[in-house]
Length: 73
Image 1 (cartoon, one colour):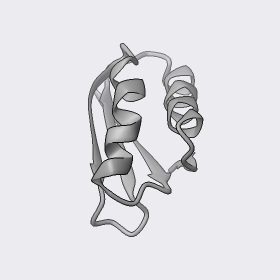
Image 2: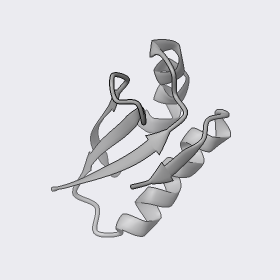
Image 3: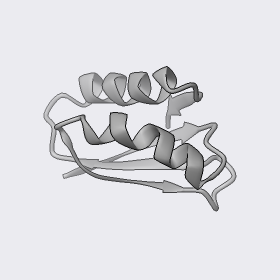
């Protein structure tokens, strides 16, 4: 398993709820969590996907389409 981290512009639990439907649709994600206490609002994704680049692109697209900024770290 791998853990991928993304810095986002999420601000609150409402923001997390806004991305939840999109994130939950990505099959390669085993679990995901947002650390709202971190100043960079880190989205941590656990996966066993062999194609990390494609998964990262799908995650960034899912978050961006809901209206938030995201970058892989």
